Image (cartoon, rainbow, N blue to C red):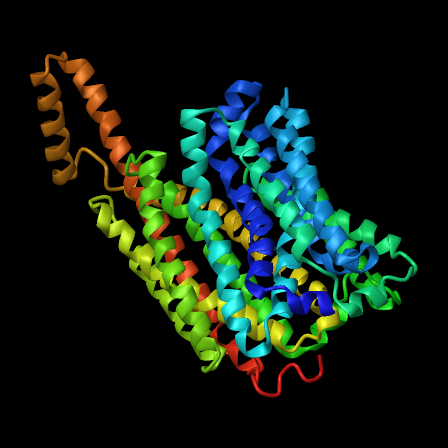
Length: 517
């Protein structure tokens, strides 16, 4: 342990932040480049989305077993292996000659990346004393929020100005620096060295974890495309998910050295924190997917402009996080989370009122409100949830916590995409009822359009058809806007529904906390 004491905690912080940021950026950076990949790799739209899915599946499998792998291989060795594998996989993704190879290397990259965030979080929670953990999580949170903000903008710029392959090559220098810093500044604590003796490997747990997480991610990702339970493909994978999850729970609770320590959920505070994080992941990822989609499909914004609407919200989060971290040393974290959830709900209810006449600022400021809310949720929730966990179990706990946030995100995106399609159809049908030759408003609009087209030199018959097409376009856009509004309202309710669970969180007492660790 003496090694660790002599190293400045801020150096350790920078060391673990580098690989974590690299991993987080990579989760979102590929989204923007998909159309370009499709063209150069000659792939269909549903095929190319596997570039995202394969990464998430591999990520979901490795996340919960991070603590176990750290104990088996030693945390420092495992972290360094993950950084090397991630960097190497990035190089191979960039050089991939076809889609199949790209997906294979993305799986490798996702598996290596899965462990980077929980390990970084566990090391930070151990490096800082209990009363400074809020600050440590705030710094980590800044890095975590940095990814979704910078990822899409950086991905768009690189793809437009260089080539999509460079979104992967950019990881190489970061990976090399992270590797060198890790070699010098990270050391395994004593309790991990003691625990490194060999023990029976939980092969069944490993197998069931891979199957259940993989099947779940595929169901969530492909559900909307395959029309959910009208597809035997989705029904099959859903059955596999449920059966393997039940078997996994049974195996993990009976094995003496389980891959995932589900006994942690006996701790009510830890369980409640994970549930809240699941719903926050649901709300955050679905809203971050919906806002650019609204701007690009209905408002005609370019990818870069849509990114500019999102950016100020990210900046608000970055500025608020250190303040929240400082406040956590003196204040009750649960109260801060409460205000964060209220702000999240407020921003969604503001977005519920968005229409097609809005200016840039109308779309930007609710996103800024959400940014403040997220800063007040992430940092205190992580700190409070992990406060009652012993050092030995910290790796397991951070892995489960990250996994539930990611699965919440996947569920959120799947639900939002499905609701969007269903509500658009519903509103289009109900609006079409008002579009008929007997409606005076419609008659006036239609005639004005037709006259304008004739004035431009289009003949009467063609003007008739064109004007009808334009009117149908207006109905479609209005139906789209109503559908988005409805979903924002639902996400706002999700923020409010989880507020009662805050009472189940234990308040960490800074003075006493840490004695038993």
